[in-house]
Image (cartoon, rainbow over all chains, first blue to last red):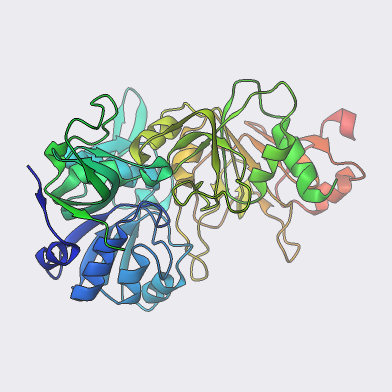
Length: 217
Length: 213
């Protein structure tokens, strides 16, 4: 069962060089209170796993601007000039991963799988250094699962059992990352009494949730 | 009609009633303004919605309602929200009927390059590689030549590929080209455009059917 903590307490658990999966798509659905707390804690040399590098002042862009990110697995950098500048200067290592592949690799880790087979990236630079597996006459790339020490995600509501529901397109990578953190920390808008969320409508069961922080910004 | 509207209308003419469609950022989104009457199209956006509605009125924007380009959207009745893995199961699993994307380069083998220029611009592929790999029909919609007037339709792409051999139709301001095993076939000319203008603006070999000669 989850424990309720503050954003600062959450950030204090995350040590230098941790691997951190962070929810959100162009900062919509990003856990901004948790990110702000990690910025305040000045944790260094993080490896982050995120769909896109957001903007300089929103989402994970704040960690990049504060020079806390050493490396990242990400599908898109186009909206953040700072991360591109740090990449070009050799200050941050970027592995660009097709978005669907990134999600499946994260999902695989949370589901106890070693990786996935996907046709995405065949015949492109994504294929370089990867094993090709042929099944039924079709080629696939073997893409390994992506582990993370922490998942920092944003949900709309939790109930007192830790079950989560999301808001509109702010759902995006959050339910996948919720399942894939060795420790999963969820930022929510509110915690409601158990029984208030319809079991048919719950998206993430509380079994995946270790800590909950109520939004502070 | 201006150039962008013409391309948008020509894209929309490819949609069939009941299609599930994913439109890339920029020019492809122009198609939503030209969907023919009686054709019901459900728009998917890879950040997690099926049933994207029109842009909200000013002041009506919801902070949790965006499309994959980051623009504010509404949801049509019957819309569904889902997570990114499910979104790409729709895309990669072959459940999207048509995807329309822009291109830096496209070649006569149906290869597409649209995600980086080494040493210059590395925005990343986002969802483009999955879309081009998984959609039933891949349409490239773009200006026929680049800003400096150089051809973008080539014999062989020399930029890093998004996917190999997946493009089936190219719609530009000058013409419509179909990718076939024999090569690029000139299907239609835009009003007032000559075959010679298309040949001059294209590096790839073109197959010109008799009726257009």
